Length: 475
Image 1 (cartoon, rainbow, N blue to C red):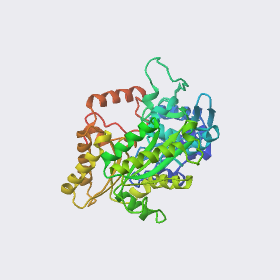
Image 2 (image 1 turned 90 degrees about the horizontal axis):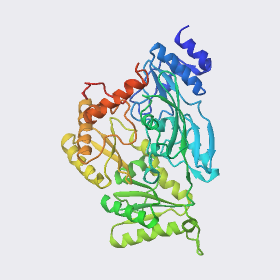
Image 3 (image 1 turned 135 degrees about the vertical axis):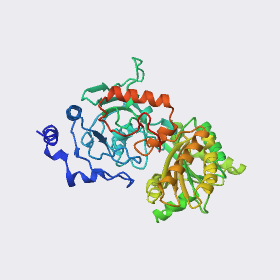
Image 4 (image 1 turned 90 degrees about the vertical axis):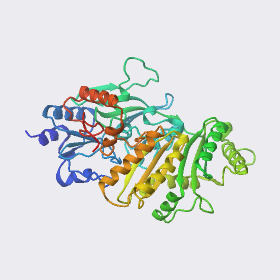
């Protein structure tokens, strides 16, 4: 019996896709990493995933796991490989409000988990623009960040336990519900951010948080980024660390957003260069309960801080959301960034992180670098300014791959010189492997290769991603 027939015996005829039926799964969202999978396999449960990997291990067949396929680095590229989709592992097994945990399978869509938590007065606080299609397996495998890292941390910090199928088909049960467990190596964290190269995540225990009773959301114009950070720090002090999002959108981005979405409005009456969306979430009734005149205390806190900084000249303008529709409009401006920035070619797309007080230095340095390296280049950026994550996009003046590589290296030079990293939240995949070869500590790479060899000795799990081979150079 050939491989495809054996796979059909495991998952059923309807869930082994080949030829034209498999083609949509090979289309990459970025239009850069399209591929032709040998077959797309859609298991229904962990047992079927285990049988698939047992078969793949026996036959030396490469397996590439995929979730919502919203990645930007080629992590699901599966040329002539089996693509294992977790879309049918889509059960929310349990939500336990008292323990504030959710037990979910890898194919649960992020927005569906958000909806399921809402009736319990809880949130799973991870959020970003692709939440309507991104799946839990994918966000764990890339250690996704999003807009609320400032208050809640990245995906790794929101996960208590995992269920993982190893390359040989064995199931590793790490489904701990404990906040403290010091029984040996923390294996869970190996698989979060590993992009399916060490095992396939099939389920997780996730931390939930109480849903804020009220939000204070505003667009703020600042004279410069250092004074925007002063605003962040003052708000954190005034609200007891309740700032959930602090998102930077420069003038060029706002103009491009309005061009992409013609119905969108300017954030302020007059265009501003430094536009920041800030959101504070109030948990305590004293901060969220309207007073005698109907004002909400957390909104009052925000307005007081903004008014004081406007008197100092540290804030140029501010618009506070007065209802949910206005709040949603502010969030949409930021969450539509992928459609705004990635719809143009050629492109050099960089996802970097810096110390918060070095973001302005990085942007100024890159302006100077590009003026000499590629005078025809244009740039676009948005940033999770509260955690230092900058999505920095270059539109080169030509389609020359050598120029694109050189520009990427210039970004790396600036970021590392300022104490940052070339990869913040999008993962490594294929696109950042050259950066790994150039920039990652060689001893750290050797340790990662040793872990990969121990868990996947045949090298069948998402081969060719994340790790450069020993001796492999960036060129």
